[in-house]
Image (cartoon, rainbow, N blue to C red; front, top):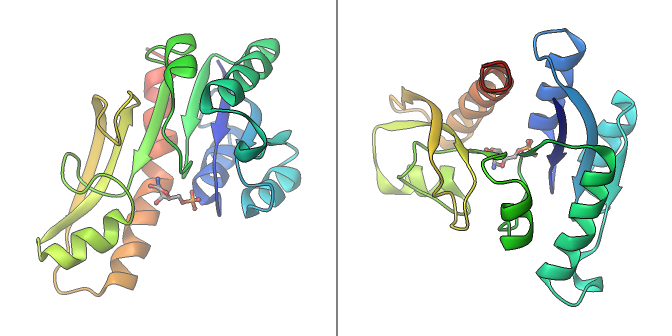
Length: 186
Ligand code: GRF
């Protein structure tokens, strides 16, 4: 299927997806990277990977509805079938949720439903729980509330936040491409 990856930052999950496509492990056509932050490092990564990117500035639009209408046209004109969020720091609104019903995915660095929202790893560490992990889920109107597709967790075992972050990102970079492959080919 044709997919678009939405990202706001570093883009290491975009990179993992692009690498998996390149390696033939993920059968998908990576049509576009969309970012709401034109200076995000993901734009450089897309360029290097030879993938088109599209940057927009939300505050140049009247409303979420108006920029989502613009994005919807863009995606539909390219024939994009799935939206894959990878560190995209905005809630998806009704325009895209309706156009891509059950076709928007997200990855989140906690074992949902625990610790939704921003700084999930910091929340995990501050809470004192003994388990950390990663969730891939469908996107709905809420913040990290959609149906769970895949999860992977591990024991924190006294590790500090930096090490937990490293472990989480390593898991993400495996789990997201593998889950997409499973989902797209069933
Ligand atoms: C990841 O930890 C992801 O779970 C969260 O945002 C982070 C994005 O990292 N939603 P990157 O931009 O893919 O490196």
